[in-house]
Amino acid sequence: MLKLTNKEEEIMHILWKLKKAFVKEVMAEITEDQPHYNTLSTIVRNLEEKGYVSHNAFGNSHQYYPIVSLEDYRKKFMTNAIDNYFNSSYKNMVSFFAKEEKITAKELREILEMIENPKEAK
Image (cartoon, rainbow, N blue to C red; front, side, top):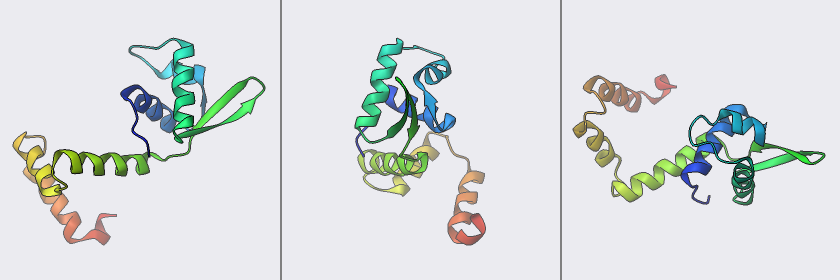
C-alpha cells in the first residue's frame, strides 16, 4: 500500500463515505481549500494509479469507488505510526496518550476489559 498525501487521504475519506462518486460529487463534499476541478480529477486518477480506487465509465465520465477498505487502510496507517513513532510498542502509544491526557482512566479500564474478555467486546 503506497503512502497517501494529506489531500489524497481526504479524498479517500470522502469516497469511503459516499461509496462511489463522480469527481463533481467529491468536489461538493470538500468544504475547505477546495481544489480546482482538474486538480481534483488528477488526484483521483493518482489514487487509481496507486491502487486505492477504480472506476466505472459512463461515456466520458467516470464514477470512482474505493477498492481499499477504510479498515485495511486504518490497520496499515496505525501499524506504520506505531512502528515509526512508538518503537513498535502499543504500550508506548497508550502511555503517550495518557500523558497527553487524551485518554481517561475509565477508557483504559474499558480497553483492559476488551483485552481480558475479547469475545464479549465484539
